[in-house]
Amino acid sequence: MLPLLLISTVPAFTLLLVAPATKPCAKLARELGLLALLLATELLRHATAAGSKLLGRDRGARTTMPAPPPPSWPKPPAAALAAPVAAGEAAEVTTTPAAAALPLLDLTELALDRVLEELSPASLAAMACVCAALRGRCSADALWERHLRAKWGRVLGAAARKEWEAELGARAARACAPRTARRRGWADSLACSWPFSWIAGRWLNKGDFSAAVAAEPAPATVNAPVTAPPADTVAAWYRALECGEFWFPAQVYNREDGHVGFVLSCYDAHLRYDHRTDTFTARYPPHGRKPAKEEDGVQWSRLRAPPVGTPAHDLHASDCLEALRPGDHFEIQWRKNKDFPYGWWYGVVGHQASCNAHEHLCRCHEDDTIVLEFQHYAPGSRWRQTTVSRKDHRETGDETDGFYGGIRKLQTKDEISTWRRFWPADVLN
Image 1: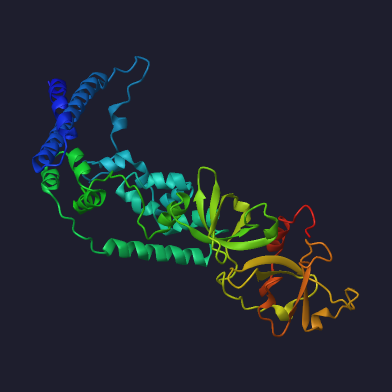
Image 2: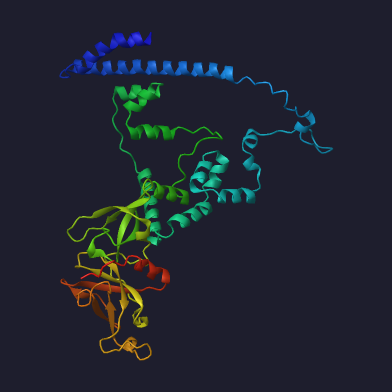
């Protein structure tokens, strides 16, 4: 019947829809035709769904009949099926559906926490969707902090956490901001009152429909699925990082990989993770009048958390100058001009020209001038060497050779070995 209804009415509705809407009556006719077409489609969809449900129920009734056990299976005695009851206690033993379906909840608190600690992030997120009792346990910050440190600890610093907290504050402000009321027509009112959600979802815009759904009280079911953890949890931060929904600040070695002008440097950037390729997209800040650049396919090995909290355009306070000796490894800020952000460049403290570089006779550490060498450049190159004042070092340089900023001494072998991994195959000029 419904197919015949559609076949007989679609041509008329089509003529109404393509009719010119220059007159009010023609416009009203088009709207009525569209509404009638939506109603017919909705009725056909619900009829199909109801038929499928009845067919599935009939098949389930046929297939769910318990089959008799084979003769070789021993039938357990009735006494083995009953739980032992102590003398003087009530013989009624009630088993809740949750406990019968989820014996995991019967474990002690310590045992359950130990089980959850062994789960991977994907398994832990899936476990949180099982029931309300496991939702809170699987979203605990203590569990997700371990996973966050294990995978993201090397590239996340204090700046990333601060920006995530700012992002949460911005989301809360947007959620609390009053929404401008949209004037609705008669079609919107009909869509709100119509019992079929298909029509309402198409007449109402996404924001109004989502708000209406959120305003409805959720049923208190035990097995309600959880799509995402609460926004202010570590689990939510982990999910935002994994899904690439959060750009976090970090530093990238050898930006624009392959560019000879950035060899043995490390620049600030905002990064977004791509779980399909297990790489990152780096967005570098603008260089003067040049627009911001993006680089795809950045590997994990080229990333690090910022070792200091100095912003990219600020001069770092050098607190290691008195301790620098020839042979010490360091990072120094450098930028091409004062409109550019600083990058960190790797170098080694050298000897004075008058020193014979003998270990026991060297007095370079007593001199007021520190020689900084960048040994990946050839001798004689203008980038090979520079000097700074030990007692009164500030930004030095010019528009030709660039500007040298703050200095940071490398304290660990891990930092030094990381820099040495990016050593170029050929000496630069």
